[in-house]
Image (cartoon, rainbow, N blue to C red; front, side, top):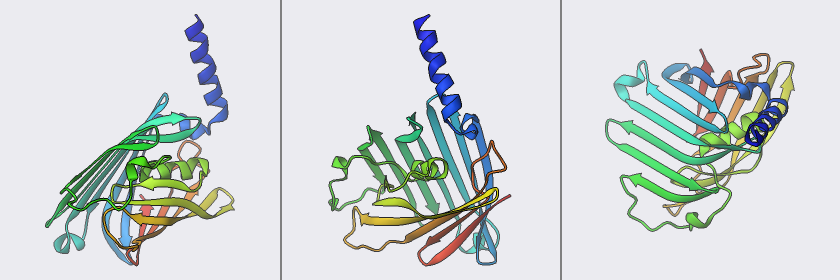
Amino acid sequence: MKLFLIKFVVLFLLAFNWPSELLTKELKAVYKVELGSFNIGNLKFIIKLEDDNYTMSIFLKDKGFISGLYKFTGEYYSEGKIFKNEFISSKYKQSWKTKKKTRVIEIIFDKTMVSVLTMSPKEEGVPRIKYLKVSGLTDPLSSFLNILIKNTNNLKTIDGRRLYKMSIDFEKNNGNFVSKKIIITDYINIWTDHKRNDLKFISTIQDLSKKDDFLPSIIKIKNKGLIFKLTRI
C-alpha cells in the first residue's frame, strides 16, 4: 500500500507540474531539408516518453539532385532519465555515412559526466581537454529538447568531438507561435587545435496551438556558413 501511494503522488505531481505535451507517449515529425531553393533531404524526428525515461531518434537522408552528387545518411540517438522535469543523458550515439567515409560516435554518461567515449575511426591524437572530468554535460539532442520544453539555458553539451554551450539568444511570442534562437558559445574542439566553430546557431518556430506536440514547425541551422531550413511536412 505504501509503494502504491508513493507512485500515485509522483504521477499526480507530474500531471500538474509538467506541460501537457510531455504526457504524450510518442511524437513523430518529418521535415524536408532545404538549402536555398533546393530540397536536399528528409529528416525524421521521433521522441518516446515512458515514466521517467525518454529516447530520441533522428534519421537523415539525402534526396533530389544532391543524391547524384553527394549521398549521405545520418542517424542520431539519445536516451536518458527525466529528473525534476529535465532530460538527463545516459547514452548518445551518432552515425554519419557518405560514399567516402563512415563515422560512428558513442557516449555513455554517468551522473552528467562522460564515462565512456568511443569513435570509429578512432582518433589517434591525445585529447586537448580532460573531458572525462567535466561535470554537468548532456548530449546535443537532450540539450535541444530541454531548450524546447523548459527554456533551460547555457547547457554544457558534448557530441564526441566538441564541447560547447547551447544558449537561448532570444525568444519571441506571437500569438500561438514561439520563436527561439539558440546560439553556440564556449566552443572547444576536443581533438584538434583550432577554435573554428562550424555550428553557429539553431532557430526554431513552435506552434503552441498543438497542445500535444512541442516539436517545431520550422528549424533553421547555420553550419559552415550555410543555412539549412527544415520545414515540417
